[in-house]
Structure formats: structure tokens, C-alpha cells
Image (cartoon, rainbow, N blue to C red; front, side):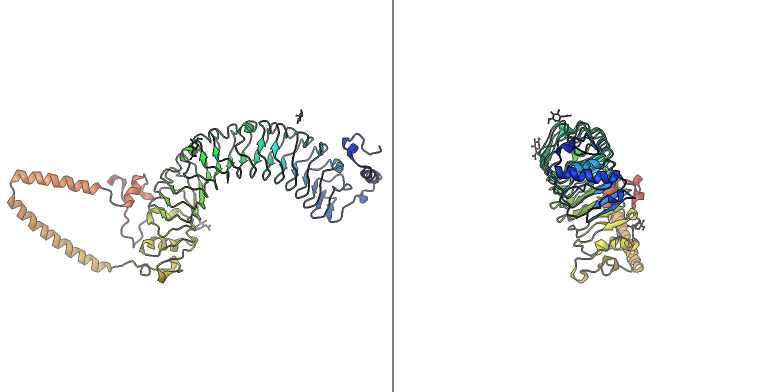
Length: 529
Ligand SMILES: *[C@@H]1O[C@H](CO)[C@@H](O)[C@H](O)[C@H]1NC(C)=O
Ligand SMILES: *[C@@H]1O[C@H](CO)[C@@H](O)[C@H](O)[C@H]1NC(C)=O
Ligand SMILES: *[C@@H]1O[C@H](CO)[C@@H](O)[C@H](O)[C@H]1NC(C)=O
């Protein structure tokens, strides 16, 4: 057999026509006729940048006569069915994209000469199996994308030839079985996608070989529950995505052994309570997404232990009705709270967001909130507040918010849903009278107060005199002491929500200055309690 590069194992598998063509092409290069390098119709070939792009060019085989020095070859959206021997001529490739083709399988040793290849994109094909020879030769590969193919299982050692691989995408396949040694050799792997497959349990045994893994995406499988130590071995994991994993039950120690976890996504599962205890060991956690679950309320201390939490996102929890006071009490580093699209959420108890000194962004968008108490948060620190799409009732209870909106220009506008005469009006534009707050003339009020106080005092003095005349001295003393004690007791009884908030350990300096028209708020020094 005549060939410019003998000893290629693949040549044996070529048909004669291809061999002749290859030989002709190679001969023409040999004679210095690089200009003969053929750029197929519909492709663009750049000999300076060494990039060839064939998008939707209806190719059904790999082009054979490209410049052999090309470094990037993009053949997306064509009809390539297999990787044939032409591949061997492109040994300088660093980036190969064969996504959106009709690849069914990848013959043994297809990439034996791509020792410089760093990225291989095979996503959106019809590949149904890979073996321990499929990726042989790809010593430099750092990114392998096999997303959206027809893989059903991963056998031991399929990736052993990829010592530099950092990112592996196996999402959107039909994988139902992963052997314990499937990830052997992937010592550099940092990101793994296994989402949207058909796994019925977490493939825990296979994780022990992934000591460098930082991100794991395993959502959209049908786990139903997480056992203890489900992610054992993933000591370096920082991001865990369990979005839509079918979880209704998480065992108490499911997340044990994840000391560095920063981001956890539990969106779209079937949890009917917040897994408070299960999460409590994740002390480094900074982001938690737990919307679209089935819990009815957030109890106080729902997220205990998560003292580094910065972002909490509860979106689309259709059954959530109430957020109890103290729900976020342990999360003093919260910066962003998103409680949005929770169609039944109408009660956010007083003080819920108070005592969170770093809180900057709050979204309460598209819930069923009718009214909000001023003590819910400290408006001063907030940069963004979104209350859009709630059935807000614009009455005097919302006066504080109207004032806040006028201070903060970039808060989203809030439209009133009721009463009827204020429907669709913007809260910001309303005044105290519109909101039905009764504003007295203060001077008149003072005079009335003085008159009342003087009359009461006079009346009391008369009663006291009459009373004294009736009693003997020792009895008088006894009565006096009893009354004094009673009075003191009454004085110490917490009477308002502000005092309840202080009981939670919030320093009075964190309170907003009371706006002029809200009579009930006063700052209480801690010593007074
Ligand atoms: C590849 O897998 C086959 C079985 O599928 C096995 O016999 C062979 O030893 C494996 N080769 C390597 C290098 O692991
Ligand atoms: C959750 O799982 C545990 C054991 O795995 C079991 O005892 C418990 O009943 C389950 N709870 C629910 C609500 O399924
Ligand atoms: C909103 O305004 C505040 C200052 O009032 C600013 O610090 C913040 O960055 C602004 N946010 C946006 C989203 O513009």
C-alpha cells in the first residue's frame, strides 16, 4: 500500500477510494503545492490563523484535504456519521468541534494522533457507547464534551487515557449505570456534569477517584433520597448541583465530608420541609438555591449553622405560605435574599430580615404579599428592593415604605392593588392623606394633652387624699409596696414588636431613624431592658 505516512493502523480500515484520494492530496503537498489544500464548499479556511470552520455545510464525512497544520477545526451542524482516518492528518489540532452531527460511534483509536488536542466537543450526536480505547492518545485534552448523546453506561477505566482532563460533560445522556472505576485516571478533573441522565441513586463509589473535583452537576436524575455520605470522597467540592434530582428525603448526614462546599442547588425537588439539620454542617456555604420545593413555611432557624451564607434563593415554592420571624437569624452574612414567585406567600413576619447588617438585595417579587411591617428590615442598608407583582394594599401601614421609596431612587416601583381608589397607583407618589393616615394638628394635640393630664392629676390627688384619711399607717405602707412592685412588673413587660426584635440581639443602632409620621417606633437602649 502506498502512503506518505506508513504504519498508520487506520489505513487498514480505509476503503480504496479514500486511500487513492489521500495519496493524491499528500503528493500534492509534498510537491509544495499548499495552495491545493482544499477548502470544502461552505467552509471557511484561514491559513494564517489555522482555523477551519464548516457550519451547516452538509458535510457527511470529515474533509480530507485541509491544511494539515490547522489548529482549530469546527464542523458543527453537519451530517458526519463517523470519525474516519482523515483525522490522522490533523495532528496539530488543539480544538476540535464535531457537535450537532450524526456520529453514532467513535472507532477505536480515532484520536491516536491528536496529542496536542485540548478541547473536544462531541455534544449533540448519537453516540451510544464509549470504551477505554475511544479517547486513547488525547494526552493533552482538558475539555471533553459528550453532552446530549445516547450513552447508557460508563464502564471502569473509560477515561484512563485522559490524565489532564479538567472538565467532562456527560449531561443529557441516558446513563443509568456507572461502574466504581469509571472515573479512574481523572486526577485533574475539576468539573463533572452528570445531570439529566437516568441514575436512580447517587454513584457514590465512583466519586472516591475524583479527589480534585470542584463542581458536580447531578441534577435531573431520579434519586428520590440521599443516603448518608452520598458525596464521600469529594473533599474539594465547592459547587454541588442537585437541581431537579427528585429528592423527597435527605438523610441526616448526606452532605458529610464536604467541608469546602460554597454553593448548593436543591431547586426543584420534593422536599416538604427545609432540611435544616442536614444542611447545618455546611459552614462554608455561601449560596443556597432551594425554591420549587414543597415546604409550607420557613420556620425560625431554618438555616442554622450556615453562618457564611450570602445568597439565599427561594423561587417558585408554590406551597410556601409563611416566613417565620427568625428564619434567617443564623445567617448574619446574608447579602441577597430572593423570595420570588411563591404564589401563596403572604406572611413575612415582623423582624424577619432585621439584624442582617450586610443585606443589600431583597426580592419579594410576585408573591401574595398584601402588607409588610416596617420592622421587617433595615431600609437604610438596602440597595435593591423588588416588591413588584404583589397585591399590595396601600394604607397607612405602608406609609414607611412610601417614604423609603422616595429616599431610594432605584428601588423598583410598587403599584397598589387595593383599595379600589388607589388601584394601579404607584405607592411612591401617594401622600399620607391618600394612605388614610390621620394627621392631627400637633399644637392643638399638645393643648388637649396638657388639659387631660392636669385634670387626671388633680382628680388622682383628691382620691389619694380621701384614701389616706381612711387608712391607718402600717396598712398604708403595705399597700404602697404592693402597688409599686406591680407597677414595675408592668413596666418591664415587652409591649411591642420592636422590643421583640431587640430580644433577638439586635443593637438599637441598627434601627432606622423613626420617620416623622410613624408614632409607634422608638429606640430603646439595651440597658432599659
Ligand atoms: C479495556 O477494557 C477491556 C474490557 O472492556 C479490558 O479487557 C482491557 O484490559 C481494558 N484495557 C485497559 C488498558 O484498561
Ligand atoms: C426518609 O428516609 C428515611 C431512611 O432513609 C426513612 O426512615 C424516612 O421514613 C424517610 N422519610 C420520608 C418522608 O420518606
Ligand atoms: C442603587 O443606589 C445605591 C445608592 O443609593 C447604589 O449604591 C446602588 O449601587 C444602586 N443599585 C443599582 C442596582 O443601581
